[in-house]
Length: 101
Image 1: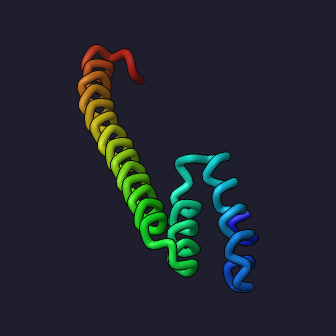
Image 2: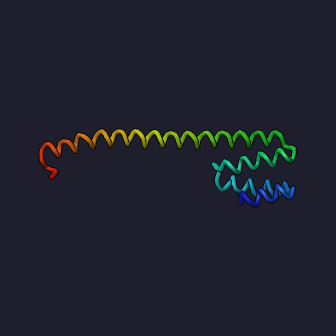
Image 3: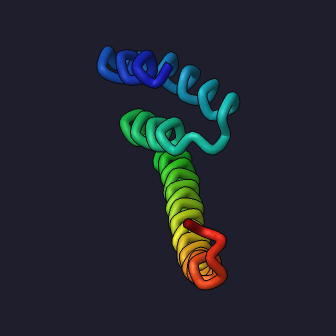
């Protein structure tokens, strides 16, 4: 549906483009591209206040996504460090006690 909004924008059918982009943002409120598209369409239509509001929403959603990704990456790294530090002594114990042949 993003493509449809883009086509309407290119054809200068701004009201149709707005309707499609709004529908996308209703279905998925955290879709950064939908809010970015709305901002561009509103700007082209001369609706500056609405364009700025949608741009702000897109920016905030983008930051949230970056935060989620960095938090997930940090969690994975922390788990990997913990898992590695736990595995090494365990394997040493196995060898020391001759459980591992």
